[in-house]
Length: 148
Image (cartoon, rainbow, N blue to C red; front, side, top):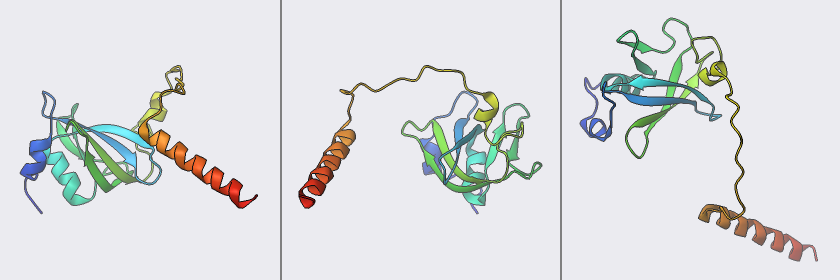
């Protein structure tokens, strides 16, 4: 097991002033966002090589591995770096609650802030939306022809 984070990975990270990168933790099979933690190079190295998620605690100034005291472990399934290098997506198999309050996610515990939901204008189509619409229309036309 490597003693330091792979230098090619380390070079891609854009850290905050404390040397940390935000790590968004997501349930691998449902896409549910569970929590956000912080990692430095060592926490990321441990996460990538040990199969369990390790964070840097900003309040306690120490490493902590999710589940060591609570039993609510996070087993690593995949780790990705965003395009800017300043955030990690850690996909896990979560055992039990992810939040220290005992709820499944930290966002459940924090609660909905009541944002107004936006609606996409019919002119706000991406090339992907247009291509899916074209495929859907082709399927509809084909079904129509088959049933005539």
